[in-house]
Length: 229
Length: 385
Image 1 (cartoon, rainbow over the protein chains, first blue to last red):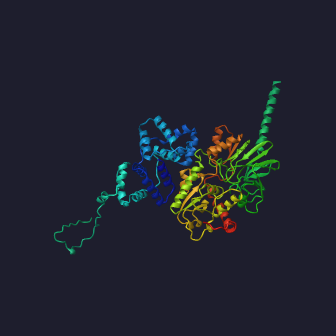
Image 2: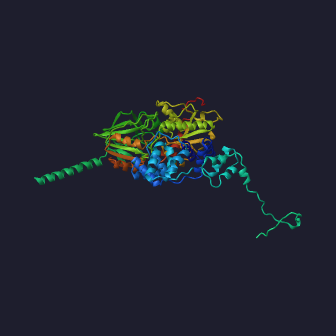
Image 3: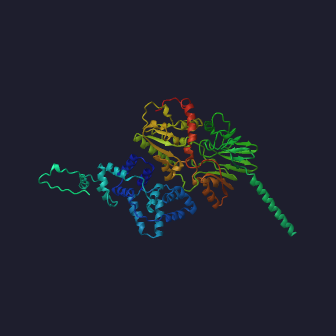
């Protein structure tokens, strides 16, 4: 989670494509395959379902910090995002969580879906106590479903291609369709043999060309001509 | 008998009203079109127009403006103020804690911890004490004296970062991040450009980074103030001007400290591939970090954060709090809801977004002046690494 939070903020701060690719390659190289898969899921906008509405998150923050509602609104109007406002308003902490991104999503975030509101609140407040400032921003945004990472799909594909040493179109092909963030998905994504992509490569059909009867038809060759409407 | 008592009581009420009216009209400091004015002492504090006598909290351009006949400022900040106001300004100085009397009004300076020589101004007249905070921070800073809590009846406080979202991370953490970023730039063969206001922030950064990573080069407007800091007894690691470097120097791994206004200028072009970072309290929120279009933002501020402001206000034990520049509305409401007597005061101190960092007029003026007069003459002619 710590490394993903760093990645999120660093991608957010720079608009240079080469720097963004480098940052993502670095993250994916050092992360576990499951973390890498979740990271790609979040980058492509396959966010986990929203578990808490933004209003509730604000309310819990007001209860924890004792800040009046009007001051919360003043703050939000400056920051612009509820998840980040709440993270900034919480008391500073020196603690930080070493648990991975996938641990946080699979063991802490997704189970919240089935809980009652009071249980969700208790679990969220407990999470705030474990996380550092930037981790809280990511966690809050995941809770209310507002996490958007500032990187284009094209650059993500380039980064995976660079990491795996595979052509860009192979990676782009493998990312098409539906996929679930799982370690096996990431492994198949960077799998060096790429027959799959070759087989599915569309045949480069000839474009329609004019037919000159004087050229004649070769004997034994089956050709047909359509009227062009 | 009973009627007489009632009349006496009524008279007493009138008298009290009269007294309070006098005290209302005879405020020790008044808001005027030129700035905060003390009628009894006939002086202005940080005026934004030319006045006969100006008492200055610190040398930042929105507080120390040229053109006034006489200035009174701290001894600790006199070199910087001279650099900022020019050689012809009539500047009188007093040490922190030393009392000066102007027309019977006692004035003394007390450390504000903002930049070298920055002060809160304490004014005492007929037993009533007012303190004007100027800009201040509570955190320790090796390049200036630590903030001192001064008790008073009325406290005029700055409020640049007056919202609870502003809580500064520890300085150690920020400087560690800056060092990591610099090392990464060095390893990639890029120049690390750290954008920060020339006065105060730049010197605090230079004093705080790890100089063993590489050489530190400064823009002339920063370097001139580095010299002033050193001459005032503040230890800073060695810094150089780019003009001192050998021709065709490889700038990879060098740290360049420059004001934000030169980020896209011709001056920057000689350095080659660079990573830009900015050090400012505004870098705490994503929205402002992104708006600055730099690669990294470090939330290092020379202003007090929300807890710092509240602590400073509490420690004055003031009966009246006047709040100026920045988020005054929320701060005044918060104070009034929490048992204090507060109101906002309008000044032209620009505590607004990025003002300290992006005032191009100020930066170009100083740059032009210093590039012509100091770049070649005053700075040591030693060869840079």
